[in-house]
Length: 281
Image (cartoon, rainbow, N blue to C red):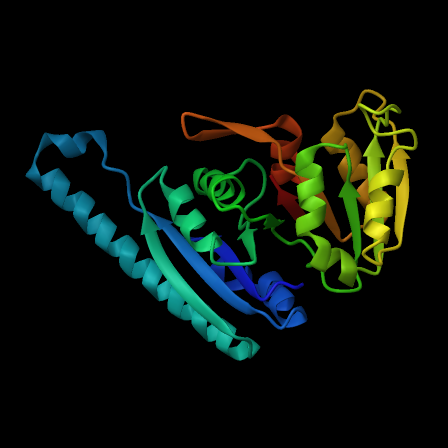
């Protein structure tokens, strides 16, 4: 079991030239094909666009310019990938605002691992939120989020898996097995463990560690108390303290009239983690 088809979703903008290093290294590490989906938003029709034919013409011209720029950006990425000497293809697309989730989901379904490459920091952009929605909630695939300036995870690196005995966490571990088997160190972190059959078991973390051991994995179980901190703060602090290269965790949220509402910990990690994330729902 391995990842042989990778999808990197990147938002059209000024930072495209240096955003492919991590996806390229992962493709090389797994001897995988890398598809790059370059997404540019169709310029929204401004309110004044309803005021006359002249305004509509301006909007159409903006759309044509954006489409041309996205195509030119895709050609630049092709030159970068050609120099990397890996198997690849680049797919430039324009999407209507708030419909990028459908576009990403359609492409993510035909990959083993979709990746969202962030070109900025802090709050997620509209397109990033839509891409996360499409990849995590509509494609049946996991998602790797690559923060800007983050060091890429490669085989032999360390992984921390956040465990809370919920289905999303179990799905994340199952989907991440190719990465876990290639890791140099795997740590299972349980925050605020509670013993009992309806919580984390009699020995929190031991049951899932045994499941992973049967896959040939040597897992170290660590437990941490939140002490009033947000769980996301605990995860980031422990990852830094332990020298972790990749965090594996469940993604929590629900859909309200097709608009995904992410849980607080999930959203906080997506926006603020300096370390690559592997998530599944």
